Amino acid sequence: MRQKEVKSTDWQRNLKIAWIGTFFTGASFSIVMPFMALYIEELGVKGDMVEWYAGLSVAISALASALVSPIWGRLADRYGRKPMMIRASMVMTFTMGGLALVPNVFWLLFLRTLNGLFAGYVPNATALIASQVPQNRSGYALGTLSTGLTAGVLIGPLLGGTLSEAFGMRGTFLLVGLILFICCLLTIFGLRENFQPVEKGEMMTLSQVFARIPSKSMLIGLFVTSMIIQISAQSIAPMLALYIRYLGQRDNILFYSGLIVSAMGFSSLLSTPFLGKLGDRIGNHRLLLMGLFYSFLLYFLCGFAGSALQLGILRFAYGFGVGALMPSVNSLLTKMTPKEGISRIFSFTQSFSYIGQVLGPFVGSAVATGLGYRWVFFVTAMIVFGNFVWSLIIFRKLLGVKNIGES
Image (tube, rainbow, N blue to C red; front, side, top):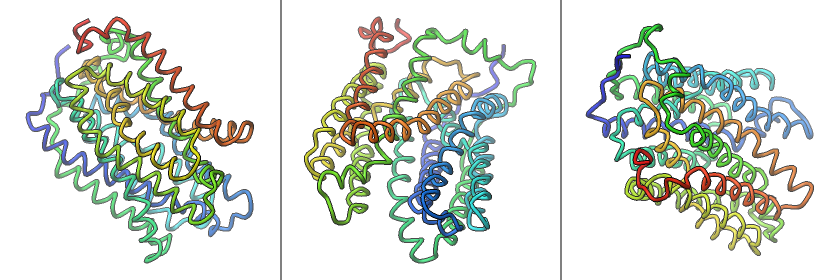
């Protein structure tokens, strides 16, 4: 089989453009999510159904993405990652901006479903950089790229509050559509991908891609780890404000909740590029194991927090380890996967992540209802610890080497 893609020598430029694109994408979602429930209420939904439809609007998009991600991954391996990024940003321009025009909640759910079906900017940006960056720089490059999404998610709620006050909720949706359109133009004219489309008969099949991967157990372990990372994050997110109130904070609960989330994101933003370089130096599998154990420890300690201040300090400390997780998973996948199938492998990773995003809130809600808020952190800690033990077993023969290719 002949190689159809010529490795780019200008991956640093693409990394900068992809960083801006992932920043816009992350910001676009986090701008509108904080007031989605209020918008649903404005559309005429009453009582407890507001929370139901708000949760459904998130879950239905993630489920749709989980189902179709492998399809888009196959098309990316055949036609290139840049066309998939253009497709995602162009459709999201209309599905996010179009939320300003919906007459009722059912049209909102329809657009959220379309948004999920055509999403995929961030995983394709990740696959693009992974396909171009030298393997000994993959940890740094993918870690740096992930900070774009983190920064966008961080600044989004602040922008959302400001914009909704100035232009109203519908006006904010239109502005988000504009942001995504700018992201689309930036991708079209800024990104460079030297990719020659592959004829259907010459394309490496999925079974051939899997056959080229040296360890199937490691691959499955990384897929599951990407799901566990999202389950652990999303199990905490819905009940964070309630836990802060449980700890005795009575005033400005939403402010303190946002502050704690931002603090964790800020520490992650600071540490991720360093951790990416560290992974390149000591081995991404070693860094991933350290990150999982560190996450277990911090989740467990959060369950013992005695005040909102203590919780904030612990979550800030936890953020310093976040950069050792998904960037390490992505870097390991990059080193294991043949270039001809990298988009399909990343698409499966994304599907597992979306499944985690759906399962996480259910896990958190079930545990909080049955055992109490503190137990959400304890149960989440044990889930992460189980993932750590499984990963340790998978990587046990590789702990003595720096790169998995040396095994």
